Length: 355
Image (cartoon, rainbow, N blue to C red; front, side):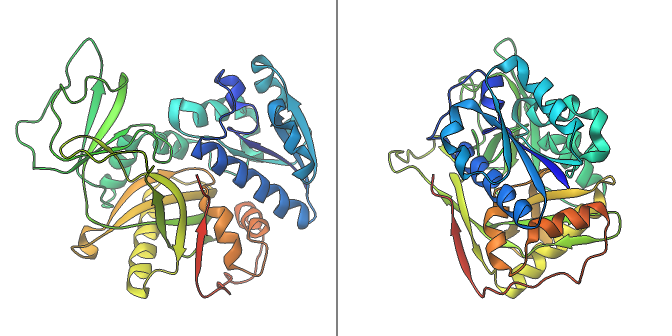
């Protein structure tokens, strides 16, 4: 197959955002690692890939298997991407939910929805909003942490509930990707606490003590493949002082995972992921689910985020198996017959993408 690869941070999205390439950005490093891993796997399994590449990264082009097209100007990004997909059999598109970037990519490519090896349609709209995700899952009996949608604006104050529990609380952008702009607040915030936050939609959630983990799933028309759960690793910048009772970036910068979880925790994570998938509208492709396995027990386990796209964990998950799991993802997504789900051949792994 001829497959187009597009990852926002490396493939022209930063030109669209009119910002420089930031080699200090964790999202940039995660995106580039995902792009190179997918290109390597797909070419190794006999596919022909075409990567749309930001011209400012052309020095990295020799490392990319397959072919690439350079993007030089913001205005040419949608046209170039659509043109490339028009001459391909399929496309793998990765973009952050923040700023409606993932939705924008799907809008550009709506005529090729049947060719995309990623979730499309209603699930992208749901997964691009923490509050919409909570509404969808909660309606189906899959709980997320108690949360309050906030519309922060310099022209008006948010509406506060009459009674709230004590802290800590987690404040996050409603359309956030990764750990961007997420902070932990020791107490329920006042309007004064939030006055320096950017205008827009936010979500305030009750902090839940427990194990942060994630589950990747590949959903096809004939089968669903749940990959092994992993415990998330986060990095707090050393230069950041901890000031009690003030906002603290939380949980930090995602930088990898630990495998395996304890068997009981792994089963809890898998069960919760399966319930979440059943609660979502029909789709095919890869989704990533972040969750907290509560210290209080499985009844309080909660989904905290849904990513309707490839996630950085995939780069490390590849190392657990002796077969090409990216090729398997393509086959499952397309509904083609595949062998029974592979089992990890590595007993343990600490995977890191250093920020």
